[in-house]
Length: 345
Picture (cartoon, rainbow, N blue to C red):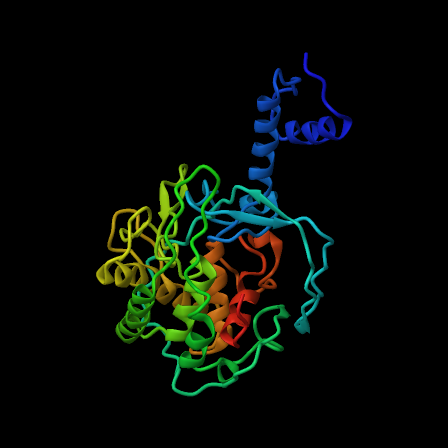
């Protein structure tokens, strides 16, 4: 029998605790490695194209229950292993402390997008007015219900400023080990994303800044982003906005990604896919749900609640938006708020 070091056996013992059957000593290094990989995959759930740690128990607390996705086929998920900085409690903001960490690759997963029959016109935000900045914006911590201490609509940057800050860095396509690398979003494809955001915003009434921030949060603007999948729910999340069972994707396709496909990705994520078999909500529907829960129509708080629903599948309008019991990505709304005031990350 192969010999294993004490630290390795400890990790292995932890991994095997998640299985119903008693743990058996592996017969090979590969078997042991697979057990550890499976444990890590179950421990870290992520609702996007980026990694984020989520409580494994949180996925069973929602009604309807959430489903865990298998992870994007072409994403590299990076998990910091350095010291942890605890997020401050209460509401309001605090300057975020940056932690230098060593990167470790793990497999990410995706939680089910919400499904509803909401038929409400989306609140119309005004992107004509807004804050302006030319410097670097430091990331801040926002916690609570998205109200007091969170950025208000007039503190969001204008769309042109947000685009200018993000366009050069957007479009990196992550590739998991063993998968085909995806080509970076080209300059022409970025122009088509810009035009499509404007088009979809005009047709749906959803703020163009909110659409852009969601694209950055979900896929970093990669037109060839992988599709996450929940085998149990049979729900796929493709494209720039990782939408609910949409039909538009350029994954594994060479440049250029057709403009019609790019527009389709954004329409699926913004207007929803309720007209398709197994379809679900987009930002327009989650904004309407936020209003139903008590958020003021057209307010920044409604947008933050909407983001919680889009990422987690549900929200009760009472808990802190970063509450881990909500599942999915705990700091999703915090990241969205930071993006809307000009943070680039």
